[in-house]
Structures are given as C-alpha cells and as structure tokens.
Image 1 (cartoon, rainbow, N blue to C red):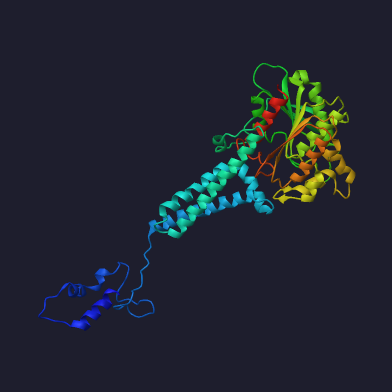
Image 2 (cartoon, rainbow, N blue to C red):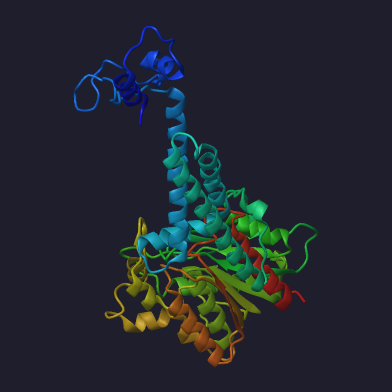
Length: 457
C-alpha cells in the first residue's frame, strides 16, 4: 500500500477534524507528495498511458544524460569486446577443424598468447569495479568474458610450455611479452656460390664471436612454398644461433614462377651451395664433422631430401663438387609430402598451398606423378639417412600433420634415428612472425638442445 492510498483511507474513516490536533498519521498525510518522490519523477506531467501523473500513479522517469556514466559504458563495452575477441582466438586454437576460425587462432596464439592474456585483464578489472553500478549487465558480462579469456589463455600457455619443456626446449615468458623484429640483425658476409643464366645465387654468413676456428655449422634452407621467401627472412634467429656458437650459412636457390618450374633446379642449387661450403670449409671456418642441415616448410623439404640423398650417395650438385653428408638434419613443419599439401590447398591471403606446389612441379599430381615422387621426401628414405629432428605444429593448416607423421613412421621403419617434437595449439609458421615469441623460443631452444646432445658432445 503506497502513501496516497493510505491517506485516502484515513480521511474516509475519520474525516477532517478541526478540534483535534493532527496526529502522526495526519501529519504525514498533510505533507506535500513531492518531498517523497525521486528527483527524476515529475508530478503533473503525463505518466505511462498519457494521463497526467496524479495521486496513486507513478510519474514517468526522466532520462538525464550523464557524461561520466556514458564514458564508463564505453570503457566497459570496449573491454568486453576485446575479451570476447581474445576468447574467440583461444577457442580457435583449441578446436581444430573449424576452417579459417581455427587457423587464425592457432596462427596467433604462439605469437601473441601472453599478450592476449594481458588484453583480457581490463575486462576483469572494469567489470568487477562496475558490476554494482551502471552499466551493471555489461560489467558483469565483461568480467565473465575477461575471466574466461585469461584463464583459457593461461591454460593454453601452460600446456604449450609443458610440451616444449618435454621436447628439450624452454620459454622465458617475460621475453615473450616483448617480441621483436626477425630482421634486426645483419650477416657478417655474403658470398656468391654460383651464377645460373645470369642469376647470382648467394649465401649469407653469420659467424660466432671469437677467433677464427672450425665451428659447428648450420646450413639453412629457407621456406616460402618453393616460390617465395629468401635467405634473410629470419636474420635475428640466424644471429641467435651464431651467438650460441654456430656458424650459420643461409643459402638462396632458384624460386618457381608461373613459367619456370624449379622442381628439378632448386634441389641442385642447394646441393651446389652445400658442395661450395665443403670446398671452402677452411676459409669459412666450417667443421664438416659437425655439419647440420636445417630448413622450414619448403626449405625443410629441400633439407631432408638433400641430407638423405647425400647420405645415400645420390645427391647431385648443379655446379659439381662433392656434396658432404651432414651429421644431422633439423627441420620445422617440413613439406615432406607435397601431394598432401596440394590436396589440402590451404588458402589465406597470399598463401596458396595448392597453387604453390603446382607452380613448383609444373602441374597437378595427376599430371606429373613422377615429378611429385621426385620432390617427395619419402623417396629418399634409407637406413643411411642422418639423425633427424622434426618440429611439427599440431594444427598445421598448410602442411597437414598427417603427412609428416606418416613420414616419421616410414623413416623409423627404415631404421632412421628420427625425433618428432609436436607443438600443441600451433599452426604453420608459428615461429616466424617475431623474435622472442613462445613459438620462436620453442624452435630455437628445442633445436639447440637437440644439437647440443647429438652433435656438440
């Protein structure tokens, strides 16, 4: 019962009496109604339904714009949107098979995972601070989304670091919070190892500090789908290896174009570069007993094919010379099965998996089965193959992991000493976009630990 109704009943029951002093009830009823109304209720103006606000009816509420409340709403809503985006990326990395949604998530997490957790924190802080004030619903949603994003991100990072540690690597989480450019280093020298049809093919050389001597050598073959990339795309990583005692030689090779299909040229180019390295070992400071071939993606395919064929005595250089047998091969997401890359046909922006393979081979697997066999890494498996490390992201969209796992099984069956390090929640090029990220640290430290135990001891 509201005050107006109560006063009406009182007047009806006892009526107005001038000879009796007003009691508490009469005094209450004699006070103006406006004193008990909220400031934003306007008596005398139309209430809901269009009638004038009269006794016993609720006056309409006046909406008053508050700049402070509006700014709080904008801040909380922005934090909510950011937290939802973070959570969506994390779910994409967790759930494979969702097409582009999963691909983007697993591309981003190994690069920006710790920063995404930080990005979710404002939603938690703002949401908890405003959940009892306006905008309460938005604040509650922001807090929930922020907690989901932060907890999910921390769990993903913890699982990734655990897998990296199990593979012999390590991650400095504080370094991962400040990624840097992969091109922030320069080689000590560049040298032309061969000239083909007027095109000079060169190597970039990164030397360790200290007096010249015979250093353990990492001969690197870059990726890029056989039709892109260059030998200076990961200069910071090359310098990292040099700072850890490795002489790094990064080789160019002829890239495929729409009219020049280099499936039978690029392998001979990298073999030529390796033979040139052996021929100039003393001058360069190469220890041929501790020579390691390395590569990523298409470069990983070339590195395995070169190392395995050299061990079998079938490697052929475009410029002659003896192709040395490496002590080990270490590769990341290698395109060991070009047919599976063609069939997967992952396409995103300028990345065209199927088209890249077809450009390299000159056509489809159906058109040129012999060419695809010639570039397939399984063709070169023998029991003489050098010890091998493969680092493979579990959610690789471009190079299907199934093809890599099948290759590992074939190599083991043939007696090859091969180690597989799988990186959860990661996609192709998980280590590529910036130096110091979780993905970059994973590849560098897993490789370094493997070589320290297999080659440097």
